[in-house]
Amino acid sequence: MWGIIATWRMALEGVSESASALAGGSAATASVVDAVVAVEDFPLYKSVGYGGLPTENGEVELDAAWMDGDTLAFGAVGNLVDIANPVKVAQALGRQRYNSLLVGQGAREWALSQGFAEKKMLTERAMQHYRKRCRETLDKGLSPYDGHDTVGVIALDQRGSMSVATSTSGLFMKKRGRVGDSPIIGSGFYCDSQIGAATATGVGEDLMKGCTSYEIVRRMEQGMTPQQAADSVVYELEDKLMSRFGRAGDLSVVCMNRKGEFGAATNIKTFSFVVATASQPLTVFRAERVKEKTHYQPVDDAWMQAYADRIRAPIEE
Ligand code: ASP
Image 1 (spheres, rainbow, N blue to C red):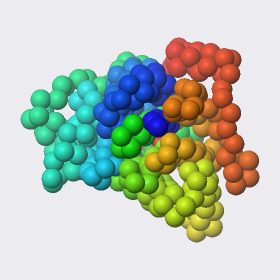
Image 2: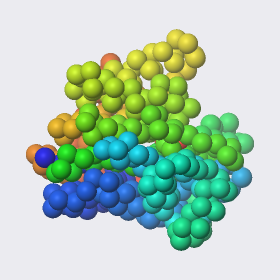
Image 3: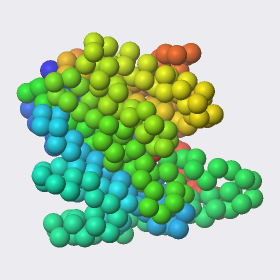
Image 4: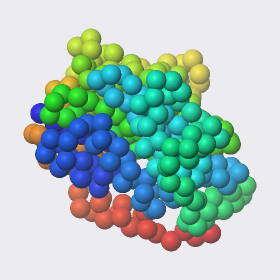
């Protein structure tokens, strides 16, 4: 058996490559990194890596993580500036005994000391989005934080090893130094090859309140299917946030168990994810909630075309 699942349509190209590699016997640990690198490098994906949207100061600060489900080793970076592939830095940190999570200047210095490539990550297109959002926030009172997405990829390889990786520019217009759930173990990601793995996307401040990814893996360990674990964690967290905190942000997750069975849950209108396993051909699914359950179906050609048009559309400043 082998399998791979990832958050959002943007993961499709990377997942497609990694699915072929996994089918050919590649390791999960490398497959998740390769799939994430493809998203980080693509300039039109505005919430991850190169082309990612900036903080309120107009700087791109990137968060990423990697975890090896065999050893439970993990590495993560927060607020990394102008390094080409944050997920590769996270993976390298995961091979160290200490200093698994580095942020800001320290993360950048370490990455440079290890020979990671410098790259200006702010694109002109991201700056256009930024200027537009500044105006909308002032003129129309729109929330500056709308518009974000994290890529999270889980893989299971033919040896039964599992791995997970995440990468994001975080919430658009976030404060300088803000770290979301994506580089936080147990919240944005968790992986144990003897059970399964989960990864999250949405409002990090709320996902962290539920230690969301760890909780999904824990429920799979207790015998829930991935779908049951995903649904129950997302909707219970949403209920809890509504009753105790007064509001709940976007919460979306994907997960997979050691048998390659997968699940996805969301509390937003449309959450897309990509999956391929030995028995499930590569598919982009569109998930939506129906009461306390998530239903999903493959997207159609019109949906794919609308997506392609949207990410290329000119930005009216
Ligand atoms: N979870 C990310 C963060 O809070 C953003 C996202 O997934 O949309 O930084």
